[in-house]
Length: 142
Image (cartoon, rainbow, N blue to C red):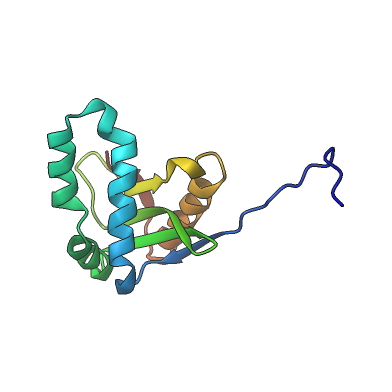
């Protein structure tokens, strides 16, 4: 029998993997949900709805997953999608230096998973993906 004075700590295993075409619908769902969590308070419902319709459909996510210039990484815990990041290769504005820059296009983590290391693991995977692609500079597009 468990002594109530003992604390049990559950350690979540965060799995980071590249997105595949079959992930498009679940990626669209988390992309819209996390975007709303992040920006709904500062925007009208109409603007949020319009942006989500234009950026986060399953069809759009499928196109992004298949785009060779865009790397989409998913963060999962026990099969649940809890975050994602997108790295756009060889895309930069004039102020960005570097011969082969890469843009951190998106990084979102479900609010329930904030503070649990998901973003850190995603960023490590972003750095590794950029290095594998030969990028010499990463910049944040906002």
